[in-house]
Each structure stands twice: as structure tokens, then as C-alpha cells.
Length: 111
Length: 115
Image (cartoon, rainbow over all chains, first blue to last red; front, side, top):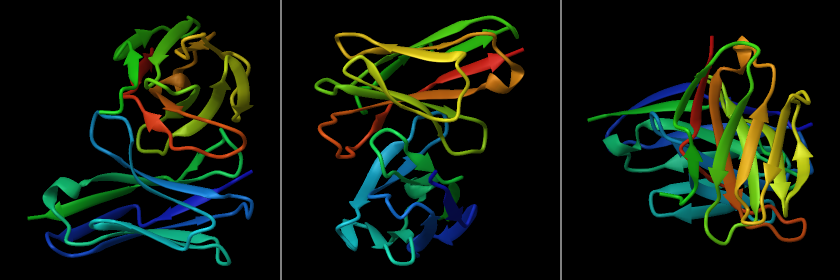
């Protein structure tokens, strides 16, 4: 089955800097790659996603890139703000239903 | 807010007992997925229900079972609770069609503690 690895586990940046989180996946059949933000005491919130037929997608300060050959995808957050502080999860799925998550990255944005 | 609701918010049970968790999906969604999230880890897929039938299952024993109702709400049942079942249980709803993966929207979760 699919195995998703996520790095780094913790990331600390100054407000205004960029943050990059990287994930690798094992199943070449995976075709959908969402990113979630989870704040303390809340469920994961979908922030951006990308499908295997696209190499890059951007939404304001957030972008995701996908390299199918290398089987890795990354989340880029520019101009970070303190409210971006949270745990971020990547995920991958090949078949509808069985979505595998990375272990998470705790992002801290220092004002 | 996603419109996905879960109840109860918190629950404390004793080892060996049974528990039922509930989820109401977002309006218009026909699919519900359940996940277990242990402290400090990513969510782990338990199973998914589509049009009242199980549509995929993760690596969880049969004592984890579920139901989906005609209004697309869902229940997760866990029998013979073990200490390791202590976790945040999340449900996510989506609008599925064909074989395409669709965006999943999560509820706030139910925190289960087994003592």
C-alpha cells in the first residue's frame, strides 16, 4: 500500500519568511495529493490540493508542486504570518477512500 | 467551518466496553470516511462509506465497524475497547462520483479515552 513520508517534523520561521514542507510517496498509482492544516483542538482543514495531471498549483500565499517522476510533492507558504502556525499534513491516494497521511510538520511562525 | 459535525466531543470508556461515534456529513455529500488520529501522528484511514456500503477499509480489525444512513450520516462502532484505541476519531465527508478522488472535509473529531 501507499506510504507517505513528510519532512521536516518541525519548522520555525520568522514572520514574512517562506516555509517549505516536503513529502514523498511510494505508490506510483497515487493521483490525488491534498494538504491539510490542523490547529489545536480542531479537525484538519483542507488548504490546497493537486492532481497528478498538474505540476503546480497556487492559491494566494500557498503553492504546491508535484514531481511524479521522483514521487514527491511540496507545500510552499510565502510571506508567513503568525496565524499560519499549526500542524500541516500531506496526504496521497490512488483509490477513492484509502488516503494515507504523512506524520505532520509543526510550523511555528515567530513574530 | 466545513459543515461536518461529530458527536460526542469527548468520551471516556473502560477497556472492554463498546462505543458508538456519530458524524453528520456536509450538505450534498454522499461519502463519509473515518480516521483514527493518535497523539502526535497523522490520521489513519479506518474505512469509507459510499451510498450506505463500505467502500474501502484500512488496516483495522473487525471490531471497528460502521454504518451509513440514507441521509448520509454515519456511525463508527468499536467493540471490546483497548487502551490503544485512545485517540481522536475524525470523520470526513466528500461528494464522490465514479472513481475520481474528491476533496474530503473533516469534522472537529471525537476525543476517545480508554482507561
